[in-house]
Image (cartoon, rainbow, N blue to C red):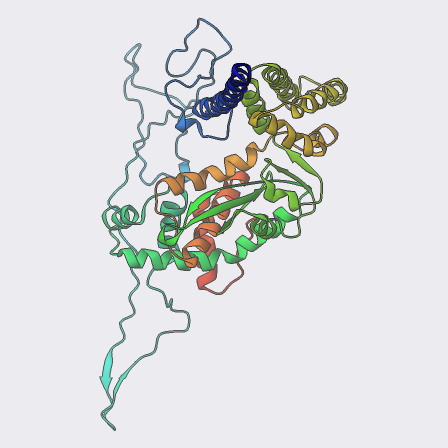
Length: 464
């Protein structure tokens, strides 16, 4: 009897021991996951660098032991202020030498040397150009009716002209100035009496004027052989979260404010696009059935996260991270002209099987970080498009640069409170981003577009 009790006690202890071991394994897994989350930073995740804490590893320069001094570096090409063109000089003072500084002579002949130009530039108080139609009221001598002259057909019907609208578009759409501060600038700097509601109405007029240019840019980007797509969060009315999407190429960028981040929004963004799509691994882009290229900067961050795992998975991640850095370095050399394209392709023929082998090995491991390898392995057909198409970039940096203006706008405002505001954001960001890519003056394009819209004339082309 005592032996049976002893056996039962041993069984109870073994069962308790197994339960405790399982609990310890569960707790260790939770601790590892919490440590992984605490260790997330801009190098191993999609978090922005501004969110990195003081303990996050910093990106080191290639030269060790040398600290760069402030200001321009040795050998840096100077960027000097260019004098204002002669045609734009409003007041000219001609100065002739009177006494020779060497001999004291007072007689001079002609010289082939250009005059030395010293310019003094200032901004005088800004005076508005105000056109007033004074319509006198008269009494009819026959019927005693009050009569007044109608406005001429060519008289503007709006209070604020295209110059005012262009400045407001620059302030709120390019410089990310808040509406209250923009109103203050218009009142204080330009001496223009305008209210907060009046400025909002001006934004609506700008939006209507920019609609043809926006549609032109959207159709143009969708017709390109390759385009980059990205999205970022956006504030909408009543605290509802929305998304700001962008689709861009080398000469144009298009924005879209949408309530969703899923496939419906991606479908609206891409439209009839049939080229090569460069993007991150966000699942909404999986609806696209054409050629794609995954961003290798995102993949490098994923591999960096995998390299921080323990054991064999961490070793696999380190090798993948090193290969990602090598791939990006080789592609930069192609862009810089220090590596020929066919040599790059030959080097990649050796690297691609190694990457896929490591991904396959990592996908067989256990743990949440191994899930990254499994997800990337499912999309392996989109890893190497840039190897066979020289015009395709291996990163999605173009879209991230494009959407950065929207990120800054979001961080310094309450987003948009209406559909009207969302359309303004889409159109003004599209025009500003495209003008920047093409080297055009944003304010001049806004002025010409608003002028043509007011006169019911053809809107200038944003692409040409």
